[in-house]
Length: 199
Image 1 (cartoon, rainbow, N blue to C red):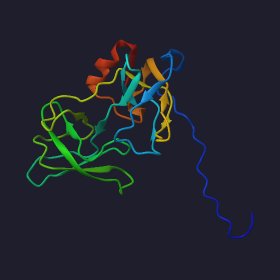
Image 2 (image 1 turned 90 degrees about the vertical axis):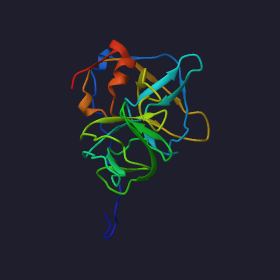
Image 3 (image 1 turned 30 degrees about the vertical axis):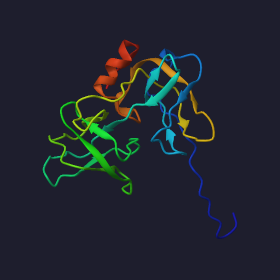
Image 4 (image 1 turned 135 degrees about the horizontal axis):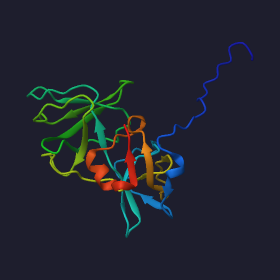
């Protein structure tokens, strides 16, 4: 190697086994991803929860948010720290099923977590490791999308043509703690017994 030469190489990706692979069943055919509010060039990881329209054969990612630091509600408590890679976007509503808020800004500068700035106090305390969801309204009582499948493999978001995805419709012994995206309890209902979660 010549003196002064510097290589900035990305380490080879080593896939992690999130479930017993031999139990996995893929759903037939490609599914068109709705890229609304997704960042072009970003990657949706394996096992991203998905809501599929079985008639239109279109899919939208289900946005869930794992809280990494306990949040205490109050008039000046206008930020919630969540795991990185959450697919949050400005203008969306987040909720717990009882309370909610509107996201007005997202700070991704910290390497350990993202900070969601909310328009007004959330209205209730949120424990560390709690999973919030994208809500239909600022009240946060109704989940906007509920997963019925997950992504079989990672997918890059592109805008130069349809983004076609493969879905996983069954998996057993899913190691929930190792998943790159959190799964809300309501999503587990939508995924039915086709998916069995362990821990």
